[in-house]
Image (cartoon, rainbow, N blue to C red; front, top):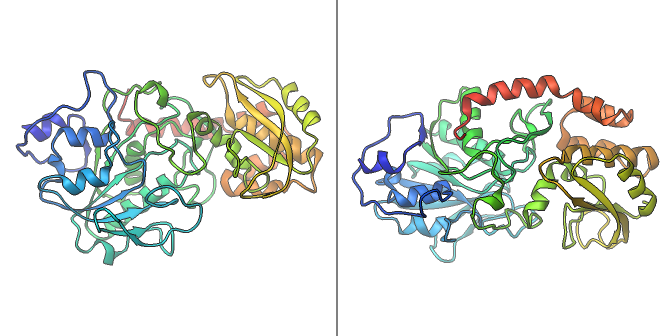
Amino acid sequence: LCAVASLKGVETTKTPISLSCPFRSTGGKGTVLNGIDVLVRSDFALLKGKRIGLITNQTGQDRDRHKTIDLLHDAPGVTLVALFSPEHGIRGELDDKVGDAQDEKTGLPIHSLYGESRKPSAEQLKNLDALVYDIQDVGCRFYTYPSTLGLAIEAAVENGKQIYVLDRVNPLTGTMMDGPVLAESPTFVGFYKVPLRHGMTLGELAKMYNAENNLHADLTVVPVENWRRNQWFDETGLPWTNPSPNMRNLTEAILYPGIGLLESAISVGRGTDTPFEMVGAPYIDDVKFVAELNRASLPGVSFVPVRFTPTASIFKGQTCAGVYILLTDRNTCNVVDAGLLIAKTLHRWYPKQFEVDKIERLLLQPATLNAIKADKPLKEISASWNAGRKDFLQLRKKYLIYK
């Protein structure tokens, strides 16, 4: 049966529906395929006869960069009724609240999930049979796209709708983890009890959230094919599209879980050509600061003095001195250590200017914040996370889809 054969490995809480359909190939043998590619290959069998609401943005595309919006809109037997946009909007261009709009090409309404509400409403869902989610994540706990997915799962349950997650690879691999597990109540920048860098795909996170919160959603994950957990994004052959305005390459995505932590307290390069690849402030002595950071000899990373003037965010329009972060070995770099080393040093040298408490908004781990203030050694701080990460590793085993 076409639907079962072509969607081999689909993770669902319901018995798959068997539908006949013309089979078509997407990619050669061994080619890494995201969930949308698998769905296209099946001729959209899982969605036939359904009225769909699509949660997506500019990253929703197949291997050939065909937009998921257009693919579902033109799919035979599928009725695309509405679009939903996450943070940064349907085209990923905004760095503010997102308003409702209308898609110029299809004429469909676009409901914002990053404005007055962050969860699809009963009114928005009343004429739908199912929600479909297709957005590229970056594998970091405080990136908001997983939160949008979690709230969509809740909305589907509350309104008796199905939800399909078109899974995508984790660009930071599915094996490497870093940082402490969430230790506070969930927020929109900390929706799951996972480490800062969790090594899971959104499909796997969806399964975890659905089960661990006893939501019992009618959830189907359309899985990635031919991806190995130890693969980085640039080893998959998939096209890169900036997931958000300041996430412009894989290096920045790798650095983000550690450097992004600091953005409420210091410039992290937003408003420059290399966001998350450098940090700075007007009050820093860049040469002495770099010498101190390099003295720690962190694996896989080194620091270079730099000066820059950001055109956005904190210290906008002011000349900042700081460091450019040179990623020398992505396989050995514990990027959260780099972020904590920067925070510890700034708090020790500039306690009045560097407002260290602001990083708790994304860190969400009071014990680690206190350790930074006490200037504890990095090894001691990291060791304090071991119990939480051990429990997380045991928990996540139940929800892993890929080897």
